[in-house]
Length: 272
Image (cartoon, rainbow, N blue to C red; front, side, top):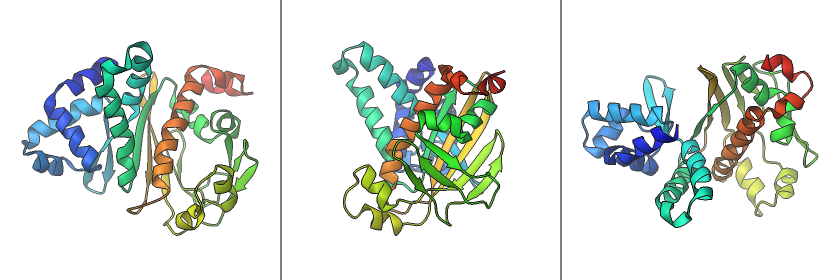
């Protein structure tokens, strides 16, 4: 995958497309072409290469196909090469990593795609099974996952339970798609992690956001796309979840690919 990422970044036109998405994430093919004065066919070809390298991910919104920057490959390359070589020699990678990580903070949606060396059934369990989530996420979902049902979350590392009437399951298609309205920011939760004063009131005034997982088999891997949507401009919650999701998904990937899930009772049946 590293070779595909470096190859994709080597072309100035593709870097220009990434720059355009840094300025305004979630653009259509036509919008990207008009902003960069590039032919539609050329834009389409470059976007295909960027998508194969996982530098962008796409989301269907009605008839439109929206293109979003994806930080995961840059995170992986930065972690691997910065640790191995002198930081000064790859300052450009570091700058790009920072830019990619910050783009979602100014948009209404956060979109992140990663590839996990595990079947969809195991990734699904990693996202929903309390025996799994408490291990890498430090929390447990409490719900029967029926669409329309309420759900709550127990933060095992803080001893805090959060739930309200707006936290509901929206979609539940096992091993393929899951969607639910996001958790509330209670005063107890905000105080436990040291958020600034006024965070509860500001967060409570925002419309409820929605998390959607999409799982797609990809050979021996699963392509997992997380979309966290519904934020308004100036959201105080979006910067927080934009930093948090890459950490959570990295933990999930490490947990499943390292085989640590085998220590969870009954997980062998999923792996087999």
